[in-house]
Length: 325
Image 1 (cartoon, rainbow, N blue to C red):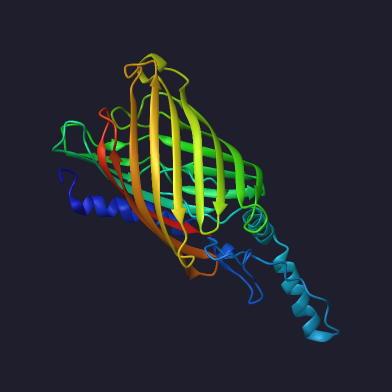
Image 2: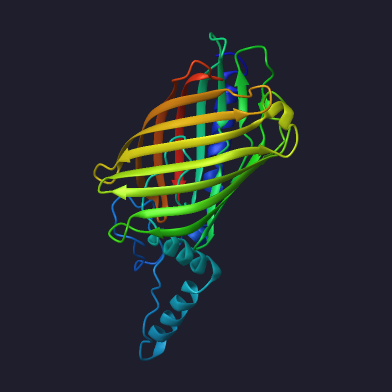
């Protein structure tokens, strides 16, 4: 499939995916036997730390052991994990869609890969990373995502290289877990910085405010986002875009999530003024499966199929690997 060789590509994939393991501190992995899941809802992405402080035991080494355990449970790592579990317990437990931004606060490392048919046809562009990366929950109402630049490989004569560094901050305004309303409303702010060079980067800083909502109905859930890409410069070239995405998925036995998404983009200004493109994306996510203590694994795949005559690419196959913790 063009350059570079498959050996180099495999090395890139393994190097970036392995970042998930290095983000997990051994202290985060350590748990006591009394640790319980933050929620008993099937399909919850990860189990959390429980506050396992116990009454003091009468005397001797037993008292010292209890004091030591309580001290370990009160360090900053356990305090942080309790905040994560509190955030997860305050919202529904829907799985991350393939394309649509996950309408929930989530703590995970995510690595996506995609292969898309170029507009002229006959060539394929490969994307390793797909603007995903580390997502953490620092407080019960916030999520911060830091996404490494993706690496793009072209079968055409375009140069290969890294794309732009991007980020996202999510704010949970209102939410309720299953049995108490099963909904989520939030406001997100994302953006990218021009660390890559065209055609692999856009060449300008872009900010992306988004409104997000989700509702669960029994085993079904609907996640929807509407937002905009607003260039800080170069709007006469890039234009301003409205992005509208909706994902509907169905939970089967808490581990199998078939889903269908629509992904729409509308341009105002720039060289694509008045254009629109719409994709339909069937997909499937499996997980989460426990790996070690808090660390879980989910995998997903889907394909974006163009529904409009104008489209910048078509038949974009996506593979998604997530490590919730």
